[in-house]
Length: 330
Image 1 (cartoon, rainbow, N blue to C red):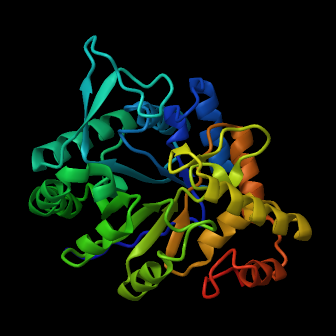
Image 2: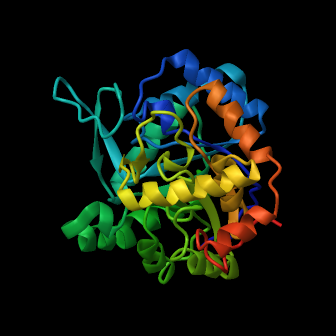
């Protein structure tokens, strides 16, 4: 692998799936206001993907970059091509009113190049700071997993390494929801960074802590997505409770109830705990919560700066709500 280029990430960035209308549609101007608010809050890292709104997220980020002249740290993903729907039904994939394109998995060398060319056009950039191979893993591909992995090793990852050598990106890595596939790839390929979504959180970290420890030793940076477990750790009022992008199971809802009880005793908001917990591990370079409006960005910013009584972490460990060996903010 070619030498690692220097790249400094802010502690917190913006995950832009919501700007692709994840769960809820928003107007273009709301997306632009959210991006302005992220810049004002110092969240100068934006992560997007062709999959998010079937190109809509990248289009909106590109419009913001063009209008503002801002140049935050930028990452996107490869592994899906967007085909014009041409009148065919467009699957929503969890996105409300996505753009009229149909995402198709494609881990071939040509598919990787084509996907990135499409991203560059939508974003209006020649290069990005980080490029992630999106959604490989058994949980996503089931019976096709072995074939996908073979193509990833033979075509996708070498193509990404070549693109790095060409100056099209500084770092390459995986953008996934599964730890096992990260371990499988790292056993064979040296990566710069991993975007791990939903697997290292206040709610779910027992299995992932040893993996993050190993990444720290190996010098592989971690970006944490899904710090709220698809919204469960930040839900309020009568919002739908999502976990892993579907309805939250009973065990997760009950665990969150117990976490909220501790938060009430110490007068702290659960989302603040969730974000600051994720950032505390030394392997973590950045945490990228999603937000789709300026008000949500401001709320996230407040949570990242909230003062938390250190006794909260002790209480959580004593009650078995986080691991006894979990890294917590000092």
